[in-house]
Length: 185
Image 1 (cartoon, rainbow, N blue to C red):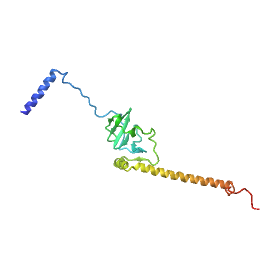
Image 2: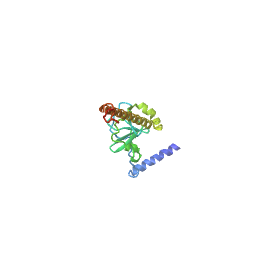
Image 3: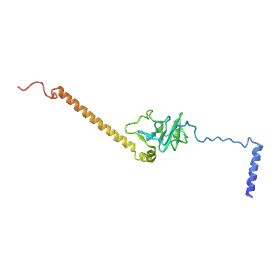
Image 4: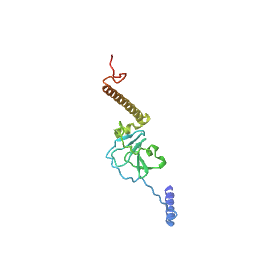
């Protein structure tokens, strides 16, 4: 009985639709995926950390692709797209949903700072959460800063010693302090 009622309902709907096609017609356009120009990434990519951001980028490709908080981001023609994996599929990100840090990246972000080399994809995938939670890169940058400060101090001290040594040579080994050039009488 239920099958007969279902068939009758479908038949009635078809008759109504065919009788007046203008009233029963609706058009729906759905786009699945985004047509971005393809980027050839031969395998899981290495990434480089952008200091002060916790953003990573893929070097040596003809597009900007970034990793941030578990998502891959790609700007294209003034819009941003994101994906769960580095090669898509890409979905459009509304302007208000793009992370602020992505919009404020320095134009010279590709300049690799000392101590920030390439990171294998597997290491990024395994460790990014821990690095963020433990502020790994901040601590590393602080350590690098302290090391550079120490090296700078040592260099200044060495230069001071050399200047002092040169001054002593110029003044006959006495350094010119308290010596008016006269001898003992």
